[in-house]
Image (tube, rainbow, N blue to C red; front, top):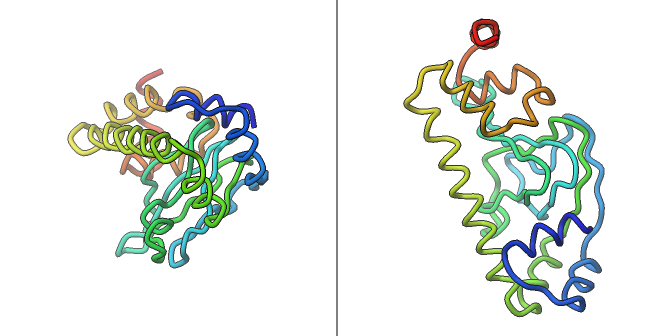
Length: 189
């Protein structure tokens, strides 16, 4: 729970009573490698915080190819926001890349926290804004750069994750084949 509060306190202030209330609404979840946190076609019902492990957000394109949009590492919130907020079916999967330890909040508890704790909505808004900015910054270079530059940028963005993520997911994220990624990695060494 300490990791969650260290994370939240970077975005605003919470007193001990508020933190105790948040803790009372949280449950721990161990997600096994390749297990889904949320799935396409279903409504997201929980908000998670990654204590340990890596998740990925992916979808299937119109050719039934699996595309990895981005990765979520430790000390980040994870939620399919559009599905969660609007109670609509998700278009993406959130899947554990490694075994994950998470702290989760069910939707009714999360909404209660937002309605009860003064300033909690502002903290959550700052966290979401930061996540959206990161998402744009991480995806933008992937559009215009060559594959080697994209891989080098990936190493910069996810320095501790590269050896924990299967190459097939990295290749999917970069929009290259696995054999192309192997060549790129060989040329960089």
